[in-house]
Image (tube, rainbow, N blue to C red; front, top):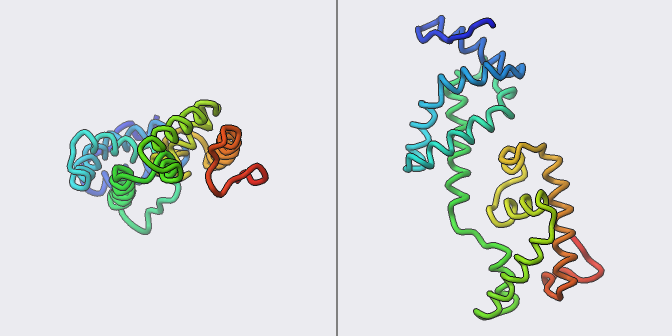
Length: 198
């Protein structure tokens, strides 16, 4: 296998990195491994300055390299050095991670508002959880990641190793099935009814 190691000195390092990036863009998993070995520590240190937690930084770094497998073909050597580009990817993933840590309204909370009061919140949560449990596992996972965790379809695709098109399909079918289940329980959202399933 060519270029089994990447030298770490000057111009030869730059050439080795460029070659390794091109191999990774062509789908060479060994090349991804070399890029991980070369940049994981740097990325983790950089992410730590954003998330301010070492364990979270390590988790985010894993997500950065998972995402890298899907976006590396967008990198063009002429535009920016690879290190600057991967830091940009890392920053976006870290910012998304921070955004997901913020409290966000969930379907449970919205249901509780419609039903009103503490007892309503408990009843709404129970009804919703029961309805969710009726969905196929893959649909349930996508619906929860989308509406509870607040992830975008692209983020869900990366996290679940599915295509974005598959995520859209699972989300659409999951929402339809969940709405139908809630309607059958008399607990559908106010905008839904027997004649309208979004």
